[in-house]
Amino acid sequence: MSGRESETAMKELICIICPRGCHLTVDKTAADITVTGNACPRGAAYGKKEVTSPARVITSTVKVEGASHRRLPVKTNGEVPKGGCTAAGWSDRTGPCNGWTGHCKECAGNRR
Image 1 (cartoon, rainbow, N blue to C red):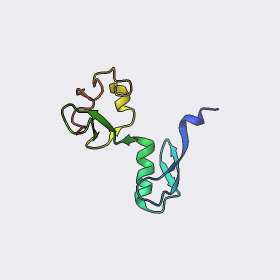
Image 2: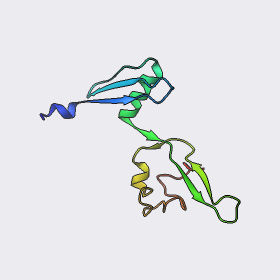
Image 3: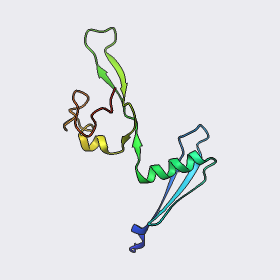
Image 4: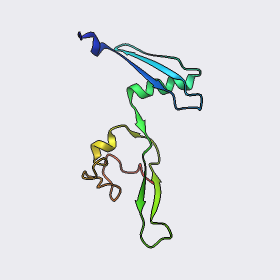
């Protein structure tokens, strides 16, 4: 495509803010972000945030020794930038976080 591809991008999303599940179309240009298909202002805010700085709550389980259950569920205290944990090594458990056993400076404080 031409150089215009980098100037404008359109993405289709399903809003996860409420049970309604609106089908959003987010049009991002160099000057503005336009969201259509939302039934409420929260959907518009979600669409804008998802294309500018997507984030996720990470959930997993940890092994426990000497307890009645072998594994316990865990999750981050808040949202972590999407791709942030991959960059920190959580995806392959070989990076500075070493899976769930240690902290790295990118993710410190985001886990329970």
